Amino acid sequence: MTTLGLHANTNNMSIALLRYCREVRPSAVKLLDPNRATVDAIRAVSPGTIIIGRKYWADQRLDNYGDFRAAAVDLARASGVDYMEGHNESGLTRANASSFAGAELSLARDLNSHGIGAAIGGFSTGYLDSNLDGDRSWTHFRAAFDYMEHAGNLASGRPKCVLHFHEYSLYLQYGVHLPGSVLGPDQWDHAANRW
Image 1 (cartoon, helix red, strand yellow):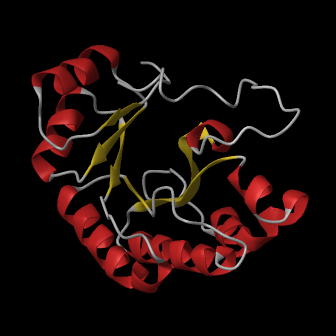
Image 2 (image 1 turned 180 degrees about the vertical axis):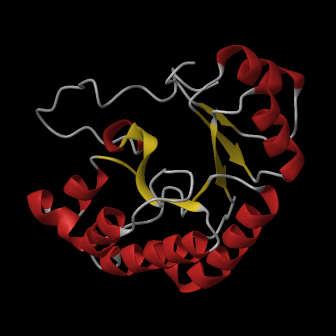
């Protein structure tokens, strides 16, 4: 088994996807709009793999988060994933950070009530610090952190709620290079590492 996971921008049972899971037995696989057949097929060839779902949702404004939450929970229940993500690369600002945390927290509680784990956040590393309040930016997400700390575990023993980051850093994702900054190990080139 490898600790390297796989993000498959598909929901079909491609031969390559199942071969990868059978041979590599990744610790996690993330599927875009997963379905039950693909989830079951992955579990059959790699039973220890954690399967994470992501509901594609083009309009990620907070004023329609309730519709997204309902669709994400329905998809998680129908597909049988272990975890479902919240918004992906949401337009997080200082003005909406606390509301965003509350929305993601509502998704986590809803998923957890059905025995499904939640992966919330979905912003890039460095995003909160750079775009909100610098070293105090994490306080805007405090309610979500408190829930993660106290939510406990699913029947599987896995945490009910985890924080997930997007797969690349703020500075390369948005083309932002801060004056005087040097690219470090947390700021890898997403264009060179996606296929």
